[in-house]
Length: 430
Image (tube, rainbow, N blue to C red; front, side):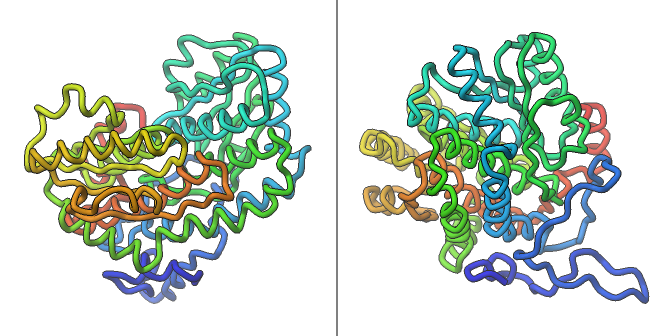
């Protein structure tokens, strides 16, 4: 097992728990190995089946979080190894062509993949500016809305399993409008990848409906594309190890202990608000989705400044608040406003915690986050939005996984083991 990954599997459970219950007389499934590549989708391709309810942790989500550092390293290594003529290189070339033509670039997705779209757009937009390209760069859009108002130019879809209805509709509408299309997905065999100009395969599939690998995959693909867009090929070759180390840092003994402590003190909060600024706004939205999917706790994200303009009256001592602040850009200004937000929350008695980078932690008085905080490394060798989004990914997921344990929820099936919620999901088309 990779160094620093043991705590997430070992803490509060037996790491030798089989991945699935073994039938009578059969040999038990070997213990989960977070270093081993994850399986791709079935061949021939078909929709992912609902995860088995193991009845207790470690959940499939637990294992997927533990697997992320090694997965991110493998995925980035594969994309780098394919070179400029590989899928990430071809996507970078399409971005340069769109910039030269003054054409719009839209990144679309739904659910976790919508947040992946926001993250990829943030990462590529930063690279776009560093490359000196004309125009604003990519803009993220919810897939259904994008399908109703398609644009020419370049449409990049994010869909982990590659079969999300609204995302497929967005691609079709974009093609009809004359756009070039691309998709970041687990397999080119997926229905959504058919007829698409550029397919960036991430190859390894998430086994929990409460997606974690599904969030990390497009961020890694976006980073590879961004480096190729700027021509930073040498830096890209060394990034795989840096990305792995960054994501593993949140899963060591200190990060796990902090997540467990915070989860125990945050349990029972209703709702949980998540506030952020800059690139961290994407992480805040993803944390909210994971809280609602995995722990069934009402949650909402707010821009840092928005939180202070009308939302405080709805809060009280039962409200939870998580500050996410890891973006190193414009940090002094963001920290000043975050300090004011936390001070205001303290006056009301809101249950406050944070996921912050080391530099932010040094500037914020610990008394402002009485529930504790999870601190992540700065990773200055990586572009700012990459360091921010990948640095906060495993901590926010681990916090949700530990909160699910505390309140007795199985995050994997996102409540579809309940017949009413399974029926509701079917009506919703999911």
